[in-house]
Length: 308
Image (cartoon, rainbow, N blue to C red; front, side, top):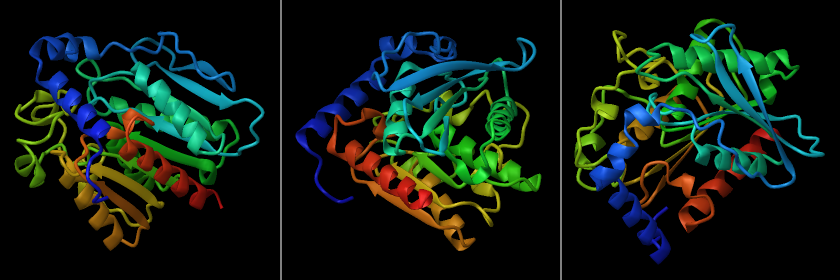
């Protein structure tokens, strides 16, 4: 999208940059505090939505929670498996509840299952992907077919969605009907050119060689080129249709560009949109900016095409 940023968008972008450059604020939301889940925080969903908490796992070391959001009186047969971002160190945050509501709305009343998967540094690879797979299997156990499941994720969650599909494929299991990836982190080796070219302009990760990007604790002793961590390095043959959205000012821009090109070369149907001047996971702004509204409308159109 090549249109000039609106005044409201410029203000939001400026505030995002200010927050991430303020050391007092970023220290307050450091890795140590960011790892604590906000699943318990009360969130006032609209009256037409109902939320239910579900726990998977038999003991504290391998258990995690999910939130199932259902649209009252909806007859939609679809379910969206929602994998939040946070660089594999950030647990469920309150704003992802808002995103779950938006997914249900643009999904035509689809049920949304948000997974509060285990995160680093306590739980390194492959904890997150194991939990995503367990959630996928749980959905199938509820009577859904793979053709009724759409997997959506942002940032690390977008990479997790693709990594999950690589794993399902390697196990000869059926893949979901579609993938929605917002600013997906697909290359934890940070080898793309945008990590350098956008270093000075990225309002979220720029001007700081953060450990979140360059020395992430989730990787542990694993090979960072493992497709389950860096899906860019996997084979996308047989993947379902994908919608990939990214901002042009992101350090992670190359992650989306490279995956879109590689998936298309493998015969995958890919809708890839770059939003001019936008920052990492700008869709979190919901209806606040014209760009984020356009992005959610694009998600709606993509889901409608899959659901035909």
